[in-house]
Image (cartoon, rainbow, N blue to C red):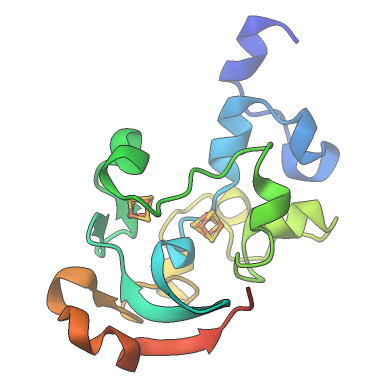
Length: 154
Ligand code: SF4
Ligand code: SF4
């Protein structure tokens, strides 16, 4: 692959190419910005539970990480999704996650910003965690278990 190819979004790349064939810019652009992967998970024995608590690093106005470049240094359990680790992380990603959809050869939803050309659609139509979660800084550790919303396996 030529170096310059990493700096362009190819036409309908999400339909034409596999995740492995995407360049770094396309890989980043594929994220729908829902913020669902930034909800905290609790572990109890071998089970993992999803909560409605959003990571302290997220800005809930736009569901973006406030320290994206340093995210894995700042937050122990923050996972940087890559082509290499996608397979092992598919099980806990939400069914709407674009990486999961493309991996399963499914279409992106009509509200995805690559379709609408508007990064706010995901929030306006309620497919993000905006207005659907509580910020970690507002929850006491002892109360975290009361925020469990689903079991996501082990
Ligand atoms: S769940 Fe998937 S699409 Fe949504 S923010 Fe996380 S990586 Fe992006
Ligand atoms: S550090 Fe950033 S990317 Fe990682 S979980 Fe928190 S908000 Fe999400």
